[in-house]
Length: 278
Image (cartoon, rainbow, N blue to C red; front, side, top):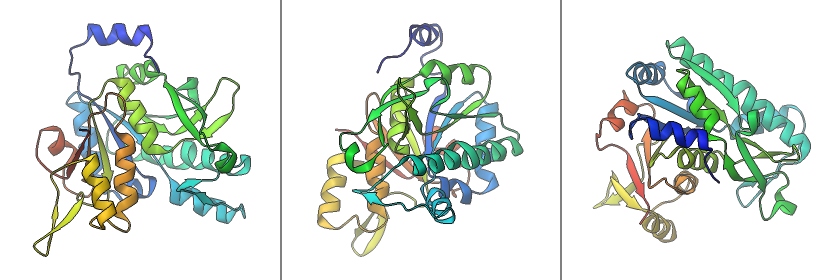
């Protein structure tokens, strides 16, 4: 998991804060985001920021598998990925969803370039430890950061579909949160923004639900055990924890429907929930 010498050289020649940030968003959340969200992204790009987007697409994958009559099952939260399932995963992630995001950004006046983790060996992977149970699901071994940096240097937002590949050409289904954390870490980003459809992690305080401003990973695990975090919020927070790896010290969960949410977070406004590693 090393960055190429060319990338290191570019980093050394550039100012320490060049405005690069990584954003992770699920495919269903992206589809529901208002045009104003993409206009905000375009504005940030014009102002010199360099967004990198890693996206998922679980519901769309399930929908297409059902249409094609291909059975799918989950083992401990991971989709069992056979070769037929993998074909659909790649078709949906690197095809329809990836290009939908590119189109929406370009319609807002931004510049975006869609990539799969297969392209140029961008996301290199190996089988997960329980691959006998889950099939072609992968763990990230390396991110070819020079490709991402090259796209940024050309003035485009990289839009990355989390499909991995190994040296033998085998493809892998990569969890989007894991991929986003690896991309952020290899790019040297200390924080990652997770765009969802909730305002953050909620907690009952004197009978009123409030958004937690900052929470440590251990606190989240404790709140899941006590039932304070429950239902659909559990996979969201677990996914955010997955992003905290390598150089990524914090993950910020925000509601993508909030006006100018990315600009506000990047300007330092306290909004959403910061998950920190302690």
